[in-house]
Image 1 (cartoon, rainbow, N blue to C red):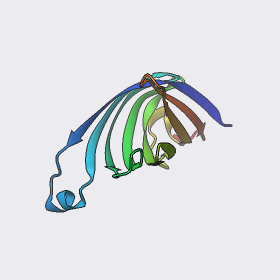
Image 2 (cartoon, rainbow, N blue to C red; image 1 turned 120 degrees about the horizontal axis):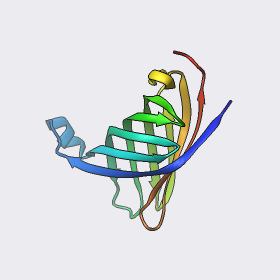
Image 3 (cartoon, rainbow, N blue to C red; image 1 turned 90 degrees about the vertical axis):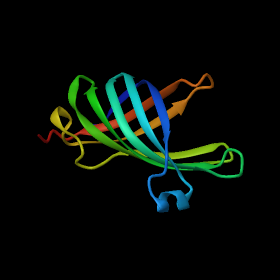
Length: 136
């Protein structure tokens, strides 16, 4: 049975310097992700992102992986989210999914998709549709 979790999160994204000649030549932004989740998901995440802003205002793309550790509706564990997103002249399109078999602890067997929204005031919110298949 699918379940739904909602809440907010605080995020700190920090640019990193390219660490190889290839990374410099690619001219992509690499950033670290540090989040604190509130609501039905209580926990923290650490991750990395690759991003590109184009010369066209409002057009960009990013990919990221983040490991979330905490409690999802009272069940303790961790899992990894994979992000793939683009923005076309201000219109966002994203896919954020749980990496299969990445969940641990009471969250083992977790699958699902997350949707992130950013309010006009900059507040970040999530909606997480998920399923736990009960594997331990």
